Image 1: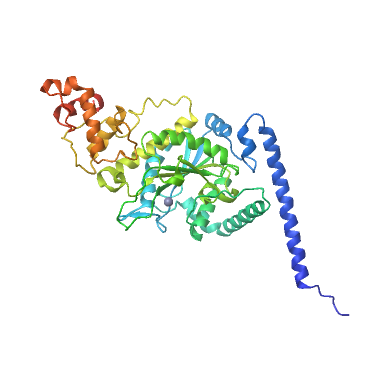
Image 2 (image 1 turned 180 degrees about the vertical axis):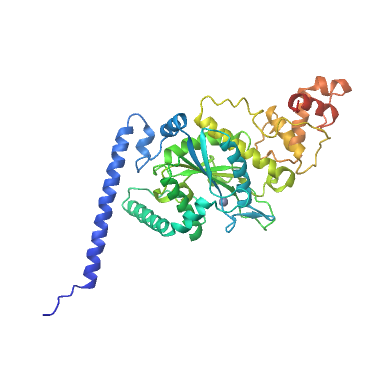
Length: 428
Ligand SMILES: [Zn+2]
């Protein structure tokens, strides 16, 4: 007897239908979970009504409770690596910058018993640590199927209109090796009870030539899409981080980064396709061509400063008791003893960097009507610094101007101005 063969197309259709049904059921289960989570929040938290589609895997309350009772497990990800170095300016790579900031940040976190910090790349060599390089190679297949599974899952939810596509920022699609590593970090973090992932990056903006500076400056914070399970907690951390960094750094003036905190649906680092359980934050510390990162005498100092600001932000987020006495004492740029004359035209100067910090602490820098984008803390003595020095001389004219019988501020940091600076900000 002849076997009855099914029409192959029919078979395909049946399979497709079956797949679709399975997805719909999965979607329904997931969504009803989300619905009850939403119901639980309704009335107490308006945000939840417009927020997460997925049940939250981490909340601000969970984070703070964990800080009180256990330790916060942080994964520090210095952006890019020795193979894919990220953006480059005059021979300096983003991967190297982020590694150096991470080195300082790890020092702060390791000295603090409230944190358990794990860094993804060795901060001296830039190579992935054994934990992660072994994980990427030994679990490559699992990572790939995790990637595939998350992508198709969210794709269905988008097709069904359950998740809105919100992506408005263009990201360079991570190369597939990079994608595997980033999904790998997410998967590893999910399996290792990580509370917070911090990604560090530097921005870039298309420039006329490779050695030209771009027109934008400042920092930006990227957080996961609020529809994802880690959206609300991540934004909560980001808001404190923004406040902290904005005291010292300009906020990015790139139009699409306006507001300082940007939600990203498609950044793997932030758990795109709902691939992350922990809170996550991606910090763009500034544009790689900004003067403070270009000049050798200010660059390393700035890396430590950025690490301190990042650490202070985390402490302020988690710890009500954390006494960051004031901005003035909580900068690596002060105290500082001023020893030489400082004047207009000086570039990339370590002294000018601390002068700017001191004038900033006095409330004189940036001068009135100017922003930190116009007048950054960058080690260059330009019109902004000259104007602020003049105001400083007016403010302390009894000790600076009057003894010399002059009544006009010079805007130059000479002997008397230095002496006054050292009284206020010098090393004792
Ligand atoms: Zn980057």
